Picture 1: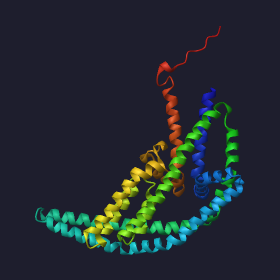
Picture 2: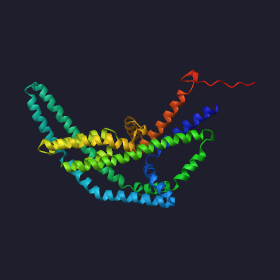
Picture 3: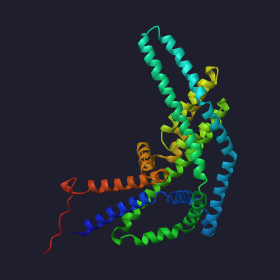
Picture 4: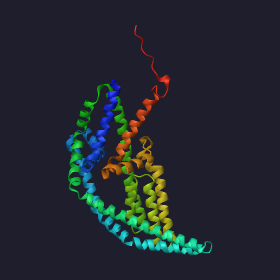
Amino acid sequence: MTTASRQTVFWLVGFALFFLAIWLLSGILLPFAAGSTIAYFLDPPVRHLVRFRVPRGLAAFIVLLLFLLVIVLLIVLILPIIESQTFELVRRLPAFVNDIRADVETLIARLQQQLSPEDVDKLRQAIGERLGDLATWIGSVLRNLLTGGIALANLLSLIFVTPVVAFFLLRDWPKILGRIDSWLPREHAETIRAQARLIDQRLAGFLRGQLTLCLALAVYYAMALTLVGLDFGVVIGLLIGFLAFLPYIGAAIGFTLSMLLAMTEFPDWHHVLYTALVFFIGWFIEGNFLVPRLVGPQVHLHPVSVIFALLAFGSLFGILGVVIAVPMAAIIGVLVRFALAQYLASPVYDPANVKPMARFE
């Protein structure tokens, strides 16, 4: 077996063992994945403090403490509102469905003049079944989001292990990178470093930009929908911000839910139009200002690849898979582009790429 073949087998086996370990240990890795994500997100302000000659351990402690204080403050201020609005929304959901069904019945009554009685009965039955399924699905999703999120937040491992992991990673990050660099095969070390820098660039651009985008959208929609007068504006706004990691899907779900609530809650069409206007303004701001500045075109993570990664890794590894989906998508994307470049420069793609063999006299 040649050296290239041995190296290929080595890396393939290494990747296989890596994913096997994630699959086997997925039940305990969530705090470590969450801590790693937090550390990666907070590394720039730590490095900024280090430039002012603050010891890295102290800088990591200060930045992490401020981050945790902000999270606790947000939970104290927002969680009661979210909890009350979510339970109220679940309680009133059947009434909303009945109101929508009444509006549909009115529409069907107008169509009876143009459709046969059999077609009208089929249409009424189909709409009733779909509305019932929709109410059940939305109610279960909201309950799972609330109870599942609270249960997850109450896990001792997530509460206590995650900050500890984040602190030690922030403190020791340069040492960890130096140790990993010392393990790289010397012949290919520079190539691996170049690909790692690309991964860091893609991942940092997307992760930090997308998190900031989610926060901005959550604040905008929560405030705007509340000002319009929608009873559950805070919950819907936060839901849109949370789902903004799923490009287009989060906005579509939030728009549909908001319009259905507005049509059943407001007695006039003016507020319904105001609700739609909130989303049109939000989409304009997101597409023309937020995404170009926060995420940027240099990330090279297509929305479809992000959606696929979130669904695929979430299906394989549960909540842990959702946390690691974007980093894995960034890593796989860089490696695939590197492999494609190697293929295009190889004789497998074009025989003209074969280098002339050296002559031995």
